[in-house]
Image (cartoon, rainbow, N blue to C red):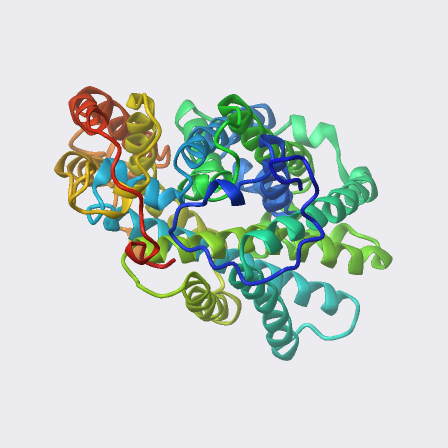
Length: 499
C-alpha cells in the first residue's frame, strides 16, 4: 500500500477509522488503482467458490453450460462493480452517499436500507459458514464438533469480523493483503491434494439442461458474486487520488474480484461433477463437505484457508453495512454502526448454525429476493453515472436543499416498479416464506410458477435493465440541470451525519 506520493503507508499506526459518510480529503487520498486488487481478491478467494460448482450443476445443466454461466455471470457482475467504483474516485464518498445524486439526499434512504440488509445478510452467511467449517474440521480430527465447538468457533470468527469492521479501512487493507497470500497458497495446495478425485468421464456425462436452466444458473452466479458487492463497490476506491485512471479502477476491481472465483469455479465443477455424493453433501454444508476428500494432516490448514477466506469477505461486508446504515439515517459514529451490525450478524449466524437445516434453499432465496432491488438500484446508479460529465458536487451530497434535491421521484418510481416486476419473475420454492413470488410468470405467458421459465430468475435481469434504460431515457434533463449550477460552498464537518 502506498500513499499518493508513492511512499509506503504500512508503517502508519493502526487506529479506529474516524471517517463515516464524510468526504475523504485530498491529503488522505493514497494508493493507485492496482491497490484495489488486494481487498477485492482477498474478499473473493474464499473456498466457498468451489461450492458454487455444485450450486451451478444443481440447476440441471452440464459442465460446459455451468462453466459458461459462471464465466459470464462472474465477470459481467464484477464489471458492474468496477463501473460503480469509478464513482468513488469521482466523489470521495461511500457508495450509498454517491447514489444520493440520483435519488436525492433523503430519497436515497430506501436503497440504503436495502443495501444494508444485503450486506448484513452476506456477512451473516459467511460467518455462519466459517463456524460450520471449523466445527466440521474439528469433528473429523476427533476434537469434538458439537454445540460447544460451534459456540467457540462462532465467538472467534465473529470477533475477527467485528474487530475488522470497527477498526476500518487501514486494518482491512492490511488484513486483506495477508488473507490474499495465505489463502492463495493454501488453496493451490488443496487443489493439488484432491485433484485425483476428478473423473472426467463422470463430469462429461452430466446431461445438458435447457436454455431456461442455463439462464437461471447465470443469474445465480451474478447475484452470488458481483451483484452481492455492487452496492459497496465505491467504498474503497474513494480513498484513491482524484487523478487516478478510471480505466484502472474498473480493470483492477474486475480483475481482482473475478480471478479467484473463476479458478475455483472450474475446479468446483470438476469435483461436483465427479461425485454425486459430494455434490449432495455440499448443499447441506458447503464448506465442511469439502473436507471429506482431504487427508487428515491437511485439515488444520484447510480450516485456516476456509475461515480466512470467509472472514475476508465478511469484513468488507460489515464495513460497508455500517456505512449503509449511516446512509439510511442512523446518526452515530461509523464504528458504532459496524458494532451494531456485528451484533445482528452474530444473532443471524446462531440461527443458521443451530436452528436451520436447509442452508442452500434459504441462501438462494435470500440472494434472489434482495438481488432484484439491488439490480434495480445498480441500473439506476450506472445510468446516472454515465450521464454525468462532471465530478460530484461533494458538499451538495449532504444538503437536501442542494442541487441533488431531497427526494427525487423518478429513480424511486423506477426502482419500485423494477422491483415489483422483478419479484413477479422469480421463484424460490425451497424457501417457504417466498412462495408469493413469481406472480407475473402466468400472466406473461411464461408457464406460471411450475413452467420452464420458473427458475430462470429473469426478474434480476429485468430489474437491472429497467433501472438502467429508464434512467438513461428519462434522467438526462435532471442531470444536466444539476450540473449547470455553480459549485456549492465548502462542506463543514458538522453537516455530515455519521462523520
